[in-house]
Length: 126
Image (tube, rainbow, N blue to C red; front, side, top):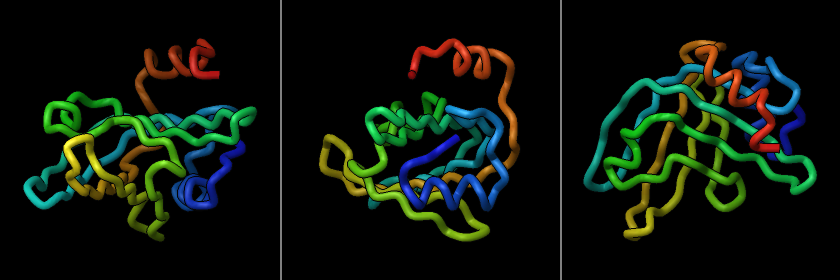
């Protein structure tokens, strides 16, 4: 996968996540921090690069974020993303309700369940 953002490239390289040419799918621990909420959960994560639009997008595939008022899709560039060596990818932004948040994505595996791969290979994101 040819990621656009340096933070995404470094994250993929550090955790050896390169599996597909256009997208990445992996299991991760997700740590959410805001002024009023701190929680963690496991989720699959997809990272997709749309080269024609020079766009990297991170999807956290869990209803837990939305249920707590946080986004589950992050367009790198519209949110701040920073690679933290040996820790993961930190995404920082603001919710629609003007709540600042930080979400740490820490890979716990290098694979996803079969339906996730089928969805990625289906080309619906490209």
